[in-house]
Length: 148
Image (tube, rainbow, N blue to C red):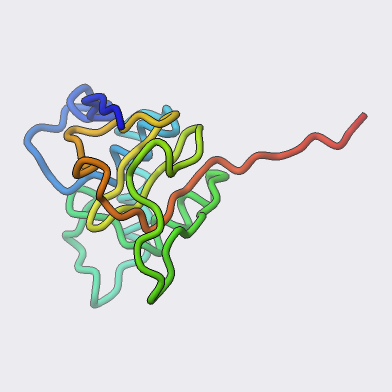
């Protein structure tokens, strides 16, 4: 699978260093939205859904809870497609021939990355030479125009 080094606009937004912000990067890349906007929206959602398990000092730089990620992408019109079930074993890997074409936000083991038409867009190549397990992916929901 091809790989393109892409920080999703992180450096341009004024962020420095390396962090666990793969969720923000992947969303910014796949949707084409500014990194700062995605970061701020996710951070606000995390603040609103604080609980004892999620301390107040958490930010999208340190990861985004799955429930917030799922609701954020659903509201933006993206649909989740699972590729692995409990006990099923790995059926899909991070490979161009095992993923559909289009803009995808792919959930792998301990990472989320953007894949656009079979090319990984990320700060590093997470494919592990095509052996990395894919748990599922989000894709833009397509709507069919039924009006004549």
